[in-house]
Image (cartoon, rainbow, N blue to C red; front, side, top):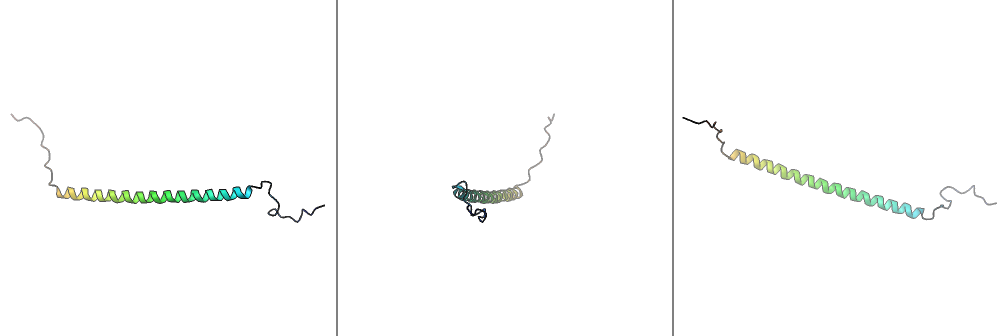
Length: 82
C-alpha cells in the first residue's frame, strides 16, 4: 500500500498537466486587459481635458466678441406708411 494520506492538495499531481500554463496565460491576459483599459481611460481623460479647454476658450472668445460688438438696433416693425 502507498501512503497517499500524507499528500496535500497542492502536492498532488494535477489531472491537467497544462493547468499551470493555462493559469499563467490567464494572468498575462488579465494584466494585458487591465493595461489596455487604463491606457484607454488615460486617453479619454486627456481628450476630455483638451475638449473642455477648447470649449472654454471659445466661450471666452464669444464673450469678448459680444462685448466689443456694437449693440444691434432693435428691429422696427415693418408697416407700410401712407
